[in-house]
Image (cartoon, rainbow, N blue to C red; front, side, top):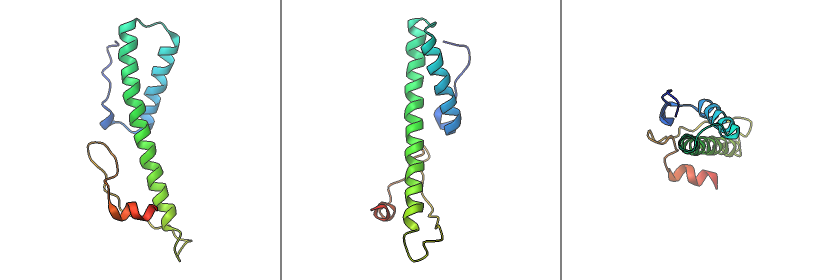
Length: 103
């Protein structure tokens, strides 16, 4: 593949991952890479896609929590709730209290 070393997704933010994913799509669409390089870059793209989907799902859950907290008597105030995030995946830890508040 190329001589550039790619960041692992645990050291990236959503915007960096999305930009790299867009670059990969352009390279694959150009069709100028050999088969081995195409497969390697496709695998990287799949990894980045999963990372971006996870980040978007996490953001969506946080928004739902914020919106749900506005349904009580102080609906004009948004309450923030501290959320535990798994270090290795960036996903929200399952917390029964949070899960129940989304229902």
